[in-house]
Length: 371
Image 1 (cartoon, rainbow, N blue to C red):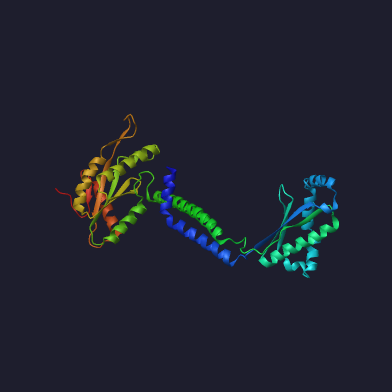
Image 2: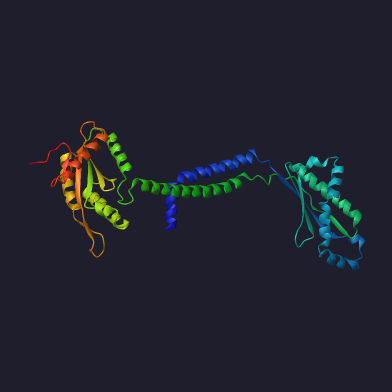
């Protein structure tokens, strides 16, 4: 279920994921090609071994065993990266140390081998290789003056690399694409959650909490929209007064009030057409909007609805507490180019007449009751 949920989110937010991914890739390529200086790495490798010329044959095995203890090769590695070797090399090159400030020198001892690795990283491949070989040669000469039992010599001299080790635009673009996809999906999920939250908040504002009918403000907005979209069409506004509940409204539990009001909303929606609108007009009043319906037709329809609303409503499961409404309805259909306040005033006037009448429960404005 969760997988399907996220797949729907991705389908809805595919454009956001696509844009984010493309932006990430483009930013990565721009950064790689225009803001990062290419860096090259030159590597020289050295081997440490016993000096056969300076040890007797009986001592050769013991010298190999001593070399296995790693202290000798570690010492040679420290010499390679020492200031003594670096400064001495700079003197031979007739250069100042700050001329190579952009170059990084590192020395590592390979595990389980008498091999030392010297790396020089910098913006110029030729200078990187030259520095690695120069440092190595100076270290070899320096060690030969101090130690005669063990030799250190080049295993592989450094050569100028053809490709930089950074940046790697294609690799970086691939990582950027992955990051863009993750970010895009995250934004799509966030957008969906935010949209859902805003929809819920908007729905709460649209609906009356007790009756679940439209709030008066939203009902009036829909009425204005209907008139703007169809200025020449006839429509009828109705206001329904729920008599028979006035004395109970402030004393009944809220659950009972909700049940009564939602029952009224449910009845109105069931009895009306799909494009008719039901709203909560005031505490004990509901409003209905019937597009493309004249007053006479609306009067006949509301007479039947009034009978249904007048049926008993059971408020508890045992049926021990029932309440019966006496709904009164005022109707007004829109004549020519009447403004909404005028239409509302006519509907309220019609309701007032219906409230004062003993028999006429539905009254249409400007239409006199028969007989």
